[in-house]
Amino acid sequence: MKRHFLFAAMVLTAAAMLASGIALGQAVYGTIAGKVTDETGGVLPGVEVLIENVGKGTSWTVVTDESGNFRRERLLPGPGYRVTVGLTGFKSYVQENVTVKVDAVVDLRVVLTIGEITEQVTVTGATPVLKTEKTDVAVSFSQKEVTELPIFERNFTEFLLLSPGTQSLAWQHASSENPQGSRQIMVNGQHFSGTGFELDGTSNRDPILGIIVINPTLEGVTEAKVTAQNYDAEFGQATAGVVTAQTKSGTNEFHGSAFLFRRNDETTARNPFTQSNPLSADEPDRFIPDTLWNQFGGSIGGPIVKDTAFFFFDYQGTRRKNGGSVLTTVPTMAARGGNLSEYVALTGNQIYDPATGDPLTGAGRTVFANGMIPANRLSPQAQALLNLLPPPNLPGIENNFTAGGIEAFDDDAFNVRGDWSYSPNLHIFGRYSYADFERSGPGAFGELVGGPAFDNIFFAGSSQVRNQSIATGFDYTLTP
Image (spheres, rainbow, N blue to C red):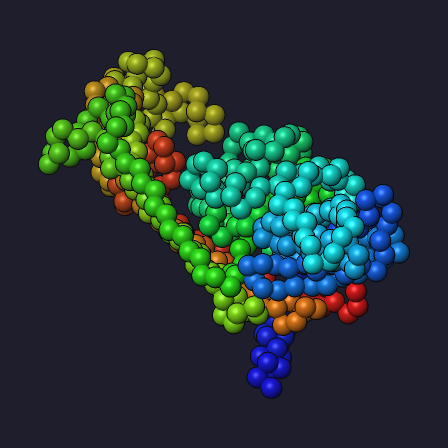
């Protein structure tokens, strides 16, 4: 009774979640297929094939058809599958460590040898056969590759650049609207907005900016696939490439991970042009603003009900203090009082009295002698604004002000996923992803006035962004 109640509750929850906006599931599962023959090459119909997910304790039985072929679709991607084939008069065949990839078919060639069924032939590795079921041109990244490849800042979209025919765009979206650092990458020369992104089969692409919305945490990805050509028609909103990713699922054993990465400015050289003045009178020997980058997190997954229900959770936090400096120009103190003689001498341009001459064409206007504007002609409003600007701290009238500062940039992201194998014919899953970003960077002229952003930061102001994604679905096999 409890089992049926739990099933009804999960189906109603899934229906409620889908009611707010249905996204058809795409590229969520993988397939194990193959052909069973004897040593002479003769096909063997009616043979039972047992497919097991060893980590989850779930299994499915399929039977070969009249041509000796078998097929089991809609399997969760990942390693650790076992395929067992048994037929009276032949030795049992066991294929260990089969890895299922999303939107792909694992094609096995099973050859049974004459003997007792109690005898066993175990295969732990197999030579890949030529892919004949799909014509797509794709590169897949396994869980090990996603976790261990040295990707700077653990940015998932960098994996696109590991695929042939990809090129990073020379410019990127503003950090205030793209705090997750999604890279704009062209696939086969097509515009970056033509690349489709999917996470657990749901759309993960910003329809306006054309970039990824949830940049998956690497601890939470079990597989990624970049398809450059000949992808299936089910992938809508894509004219260039298609990037799919799958989140991890728990197993019958508890597994976890933890990581910490740290960088600082201890070995950073200062820029002699923009960092020529001490940061403050209190630190006369310090020219470089503090820079600190901490990234940390972990994951945990395991069973809720053994062989039936599983969970997985991962978290990643980043704490950044980005130090930067800038060389810019502010009005000299003489210029703020109306004395523009230095500017006239440098440029050769004259300062004209706007109250004289033709008001439309400016013809016949009188020059202010020696570039001096009378004090009674200065705007008090302009004077008030000029007083908000800091005075020059370098000589000259151009590039006469340098400043440094620190930008705070923090983000938190997590994924939580649940899987339930109600029966061999029914599987239900749900996943929620959350990413929150807070960024605050002062301008060169201080918090009130702002001014240009510091080099290496290119952001002045504050920004708060929150991205969320939810996916749920179930599949039910009516008949084999």
